Length: 116
Image (cartoon, rainbow, N blue to C red):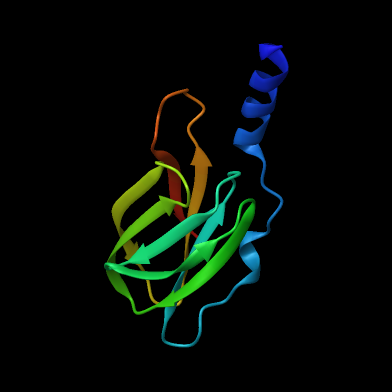
């Protein structure tokens, strides 16, 4: 009985059907794209202000001014989170690839940050 649940949980760690390359920031600005590859709905905060939510297995861009921004990702109806200072570069898309840590009992998201 436990084996099918374990297999489902591990398979969910790598699921991502979105294309991160399809968003261009407005001229003179930049964007943060939160690519949620988890089964969680996530609240997104930038510099202490809630900017919106990202549904499970989807992505959403947030237009920002260039600079270093404090980003917090908070699981809706749960305890998982991520928080870090993120460099946002003018004319570039900064992608946060959010994954669930497959180690049972870990409440933090694994987030890979890269520029597109």
